[in-house]
Length: 339
Image 1 (cartoon, rainbow, N blue to C red):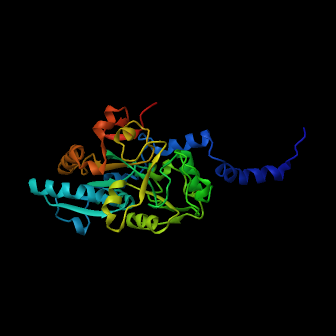
Image 2: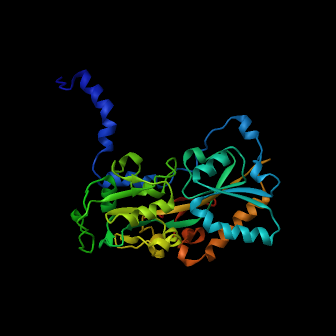
Image 3: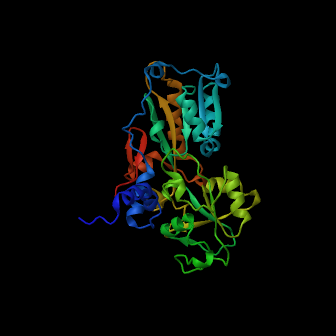
């Protein structure tokens, strides 16, 4: 049998095939695999040693003597902080609260130092610890942001993905879905690749950090994202509309539509037609030495309270998602509506 590759050829293929596949164009099959990264299965529990499983909740110094300890990701801290303050006053509770990132929440939860951790995305495999449950507050759209002087108003999801991959590299190569051509400027992508261990959020654009353009400017905070988009006429980034409004004292970047659906269109998001969103979750413990009924009551209150939240936040509460056919396991959102 003719084997033109030879033994060495197959070794080379084995070494470089993953990279070759990784660089393949964004065809329908690749896009399907990207979309499959929106959630990970809730049926897998990350194993822990028996000593860890027997360990009870032990507060750190900042939470010592409180009725409960909570850590919240920066995306949801500003949303929930006033509600938690009001609940604490009305119920005469000493609630110790710390702001951080999803990584902060995951770290304190895994060390069993808090009763609840707040996340801006679905849990990853390493977050699913024995005795830990996730409770979804709702989802919030993530807007694609351009400099206000960019005339582009509506891009297809395929165009957005290709832009963040780094091709095309110039706005003059872009004609949006309305027939409008971009500025005669190079494209500068701005990314905030937070929560790399978890599905959802920016992974709905590209499933792996290495798929983003090597020329992308990466920022670490929400204000930095907004500021960098405003500072460069050729910039494109992403953030929730509520945070854009919070930082509007220095101007507002322009939020554009994706495939004809704007990020503020509630019904498009509920129907699964708007593709980019955060999933806001709170955790609770179940089991001897872990359960805190006061924390469970607070989480139940917050799930209910977001239904009456300011419309500017544009959060779709869990109850509305259930009615629209989104998939849940217990109180956790685990999948988009089946089409």
